[in-house]
Amino acid sequence: MTVGWMIFEIAINLYQSLLYLFFLKNCVPLAKSSKAMDILCVLACAGFYTLYLFFDIAVTDSLNVLILFLYLLYMSEERWYVLALWVMVKEVIVIATVGFMLQLCQAVTSATHAMLMETGPLRLVFVISTNLVLFLVLFIFLRRMKKTDSPLSLQALLYFLVTNTAVLFAIEMIFSLQVIYLDTPDWHVFAAYGALLVCSVLSVFLYHIMTGIVQKENQAQTALNHARLTRKHQMVLKDMYTDMIARQHDFRHQLQTIEQLVNQGNSEEAKAYLAEYEKEISEDKMIITGSIAVDALLTAKLLACKQNDIEFRFVQCPLGNLPISEIDFCAIVGNLLDNAIEGVCRIADMQNQKWICLSFNRVWDTFSIHCENNMAIQTVKRHSRGFFTAKESDIVNHGFGIRNIELIVKNANGFCTFEAADNVFTANVTLPYPIQEAIACSKS
Image: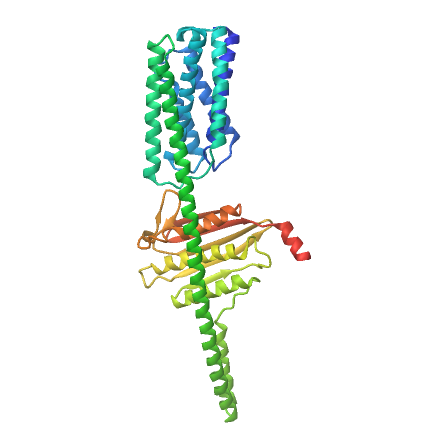
């Protein structure tokens, strides 16, 4: 093999590795962005393929799927079997296309497999045409696919993974038989490649259909849960109103008592009584943030904390302009505090002080919400997708509190994290703050 031909083969290997990486990055949502990792992955795949130019390696070059799988495992937060599924789909498409083109070139040129593997014009035509067709197949496939997080269950995803793994194994066997035993074109091989490729493509389309259905179901359930949460908040506000009426009635009695003491000439007793009453009502905190809706929500949650003997600590910042709509903002805060109150109430140790800490903070173009509460660590379970829940008895609303928050934050181009450690549950929500819009609103 001449130096020029070796450079050509290595360039083709780099091109194919880059093409495979591009395909997978458009199929799988990545949580990280690293040019260095991209380059390392391409070089590793190309280097693996290049080994076959110098050594007679007995194993299939499809083992490059391990390199791509490890890359996705590092770069994506998706479950491992979702990543394995897309790597298998890529390999099925590649081997089926290469095998199909090998049969086509043999039919057109009457060349054997050995002749197509030798350096020369026939191999040049075979390599270039195969890679062009491979690019078109992957491009057309990507045009019909939509990159999205997979909400499917483990059983469903394992079904798709096993199906495509079986298809890949069958295609590998056909390719091996074609290379070893078939020197002439056979339409049965064309049909086998086509049928197996169709099976893989149909499984992927079914995967996307099921994903869309589950996402719509989740959105409907989220909307229903949002309505239930709104109803719950309305009931709490009703309790607040009842409490205000009771306070007004009590205030009238207190004034009458003070009036009687003054009329009887007991001014010192009246002063002492008034001071004691002022101390009592000063303990009732008024939450004023600048947003009436948020004030009402926080006051309602403060009342709920008092009813459950929970210390509520709130660090506020002015909310003249919210980073998102009032409805979504209240949904985030309401879900955070509902989860916190529920978690605190599950503490079995009555001697343990119950507390919740909520804080708002704005730093330039970023708005953050931080919520902490103590809890019993054994009552909190973490799913593989990162959800925390302990509502095993509530199947309908299972996990939708945090899911609501994540959906709203994702739509607002923000991010959120949830952690449980040392009997403390911590939730952080970060939202982009539209500075220009805020300035425009303040000027108007």
